[in-house]
Length: 359
Image (cartoon, rainbow, N blue to C red; front, side, top):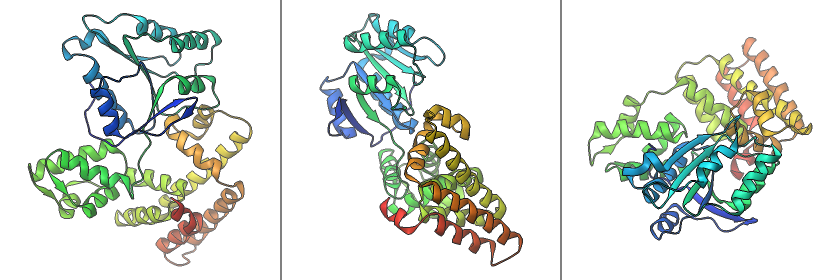
């Protein structure tokens, strides 16, 4: 049902204010000790880690022979949250616990539904474990505060590719019985990106090739893992958004190696700044995360991190960035310097060195 993949997710509990976070191993120890909450909020954009945590929770709480009766996954987008709560109130069948996974609740604002939710949060069914799963909550909404106060928060934020993700790759490969060095793990992340689902898939393919106990090399990565132009454009947008100069320059190197035309690369950079400026203006007007996501053409969970970055950027920086992008477009057409040099100079201006140092 849910892919079981090892991870290093951070677990935190909030009761009015957050206490210290829990490591993955600490969370597993809590499960083994039978210390399981009746209410969880799983939040974050890294869906593989979220699914892994659900796997562990379900494996611990519900025997495989009766899961069809006692594990429910309900999406309430555009529907009634009360239906999910009614399922949570039901007694488990031939088991001591039921697991109910609720998604699509982020925009619920109906007063009656919120009142029903609060009643359940105040007195949850002790024989049900209810998991509210979200890729990102808007803290300005009432439902976000309600869930954060009542639930154990499990956070699944995307890892920084220059630090956490290569370590995750090495540990994932080791768990599967093979090995990969730190440099090779970093190279794999550079080729594939930070999406853990794709990294796991590519690592599995490499491990199949080297066999159990084998060691993955850089040459094997270059030969077996196909570098995706779509992925590199996508990651370049993320790097520009985050002000990560080193990563952006590395991705430009990949794009030129793939013989991507300079105007296409510039277009991806320009798109980021135009969306950031549009989001900045919407935020000033009091727009919600969902409204911003729709306006800039992003899914709500990706818009969450995007909006965090936009809030930290001055409007003047965005306007100046758009001016420099327009100037670079003219320079590319007039053949001033090489296209690669023009784009690298632009990235250095858009992503000041101090930004990368603070990351």
